Image (cartoon, rainbow, N blue to C red):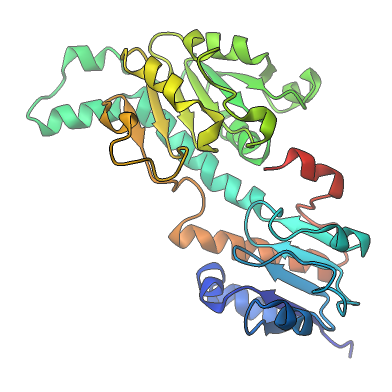
Length: 332
């Protein structure tokens, strides 16, 4: 009988309990000899990696340096049970031919689904109507006239990464026009995703709702600011579930205080915003505390992703979400 390969968890066990339910852990134990790192000190990780074929990392795992990897001669796959691999990836991993994969696509599903929920409730003016009804009102005409259905309108999506692509898949269920801004994508590729590629200024000018899904890079810092937020049409909705620093919040406040647009912000810059932050005072700003991604039971999605990648590896099939060295410059 062929001996089992070794899979090691390079994370705190407390975190592991939030990522892996009993079913997934049982499956992994069936497929591999499994071992948990006793702690995250370099010397401990170095010892744990001896003889390991697969390593599972997550939030809190340090960078896998050449020192930590010096005895990891069998290592062939690192599955990152979190989003960005930048905290753990090093040139040493790629130089050794180790495949690195990321759970970013799994997290993206939750972010896109949350964005869709915010989009629908915002179009229906649910937040203002809820407040009005709680105050004793009912079908106030001035509030009802702002209600829209997710039908026949322009939805602008900024960024065609994991979140943006899943958002486009979700929106295919609705009769809306999908506009896409992503300078790394061709018009033909956008069409295949079910969208029309446009420049950012056109997207802002035409969209009834703008969904921000871009990565935060030096070139995307404050990509939305005083120079272009004024292009938003009256009644437009802007939803940011990506990173707060993509939007210049002072410029956004200036547009919002006129009352002509609505913003749903799951992220701010910094987080949390100060108790007296001006955005907290506006009724046309919906603020949530960075919960669009995996939270509570949603964290188990990442455990399921790890299992799926492990099964691909065992079956000698292509990884589901590899992160190649040349991709790092475009990733958050």
